[in-house]
Length: 320
Image 1 (cartoon, rainbow, N blue to C red):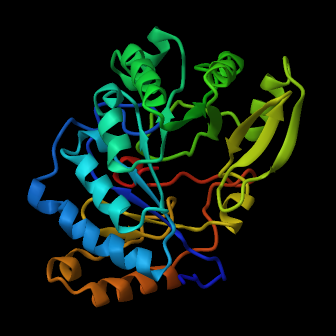
Image 2: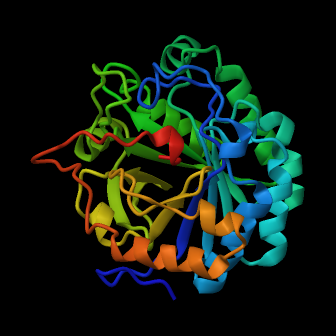
């Protein structure tokens, strides 16, 4: 079992398989060039799998594949199958922008993927193009439909932004409800790589907007997840609010970058590399590095309602 210095059980590993992304979203990486990390800098799927097996044996029960955009990594379904075959009852998911999902949904399902989250911030083509700096909406919607058609469970992630999609939150909720998907509204996480003029909606503002049409009631904070669950009449949705300390109190996750950095917290830059150990085949040394990362895992981030600070973390490197 993996326990950090604050007594939190760590059973969730997020793996970024690439830093590359085919979007340039305003809240993430609007000015980052479309460049490629040299392949030799990245851990191969076989190398990643060496660590994944050890992490599962140590107590990891949930794995989420992220990016960048994970579907840009060639043969991702092979990696999914490697993990799924090792532990069939593992909670295995991916987060994607959905642009390429129509072409890969069936392969991912056949490889053992159980569910996925798709980023959908607007149902308006012009707004989607402004946010992603690319004409994306029709492809994303087609990807969502195909994922549902092949039997994958789909959740939607929506970053709530003032003067961009605040007038669509009800429509997005109803879109998700109509397709039997859960939507999760996410507070904008301030970071130095984002477009500087963005302003996010906080939890209470999101609820206020939705309350214009629905009777919103708190159900509970999800167990082992940084999301609070609410009901809009008979529909359940979520809000992820990193500006609340409750976001950190039950944190059960660590992150692994495509280059082998083990990252204890999304907010902070501190990380330790397992690349050398894994490339030597020294799994024991990699597990010792994992234990050190847990010892250094901070109690909480520095996004707070009272004294909000901006993170220098590049989310596209860590699946933020």
